Image (tube, rainbow, N blue to C red; front, side, top):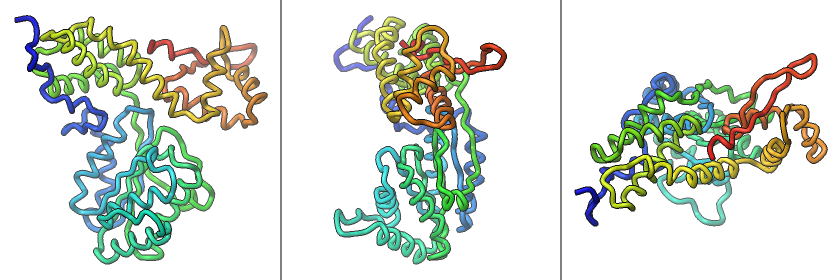
Length: 354
């Protein structure tokens, strides 16, 4: 029979395609996992871990690596995993840590951040246990919050003689004030983009875990790999796998075909593009808008002149924004020549996703 019955499905385990799914084996990140594990291993001996910064473009395995090692160490130390986009203030971060360490919700009103901090440190001291604080998407914290959180946690050993290790994952450098920067010297672990072969093996792993055998044609899978490599975003490929499967089921088909992939591709690309742009601040969105409004060659000098006339911005900050837009794959940066010197040209890569 060619078509699915009403109670049949192509999915063995659809949760494999959820954004929060953590595979048992994290492919192509052995080097990073080993380095992070080594930095946190002192916690197994009840010693202070090495503070660590996980740095790299989006969708390169930073969160998965962080969660994998935290799961392994959670029997030996307190762990507090915090998504910074959902807790952008110092109070919210400290409240999440309080929940994990004290095993209770903080009072809704009437308690200060200082009291939360005191309660956390007292609990650590009473139990003589190490705390590892994992700050995911650390760059989403407000500047004041980032400095307050780091400085407070790093000074805890002086006030309470407790041991706290910090792991922060970020796609961009976070500007710390002099007071915090003087005491926060993390070991950096870099997460590069996955190449096409790595994308293929990771997506193949998800297909085997998430679909029944032979539920996806080779042609459909190859097309998803191609589109994912083009977008340089593994999350996009996992999204396409799931949506193509749903589309095939909508047709009551027993296999995911190329036509299912093509049907969900355009809409999916726009969704992921919108998510990427929503993660930018106003200056970053304005820079992107200017780049795409210029016809013909786009060089950094022209963009900066227009931007400086509209927003009072230093060239250093402009350079940081350009690098972030490239990391988010919203632009492509190449070096070219103009006159006597070299200049950076921005080619439009958003169109590659559409």
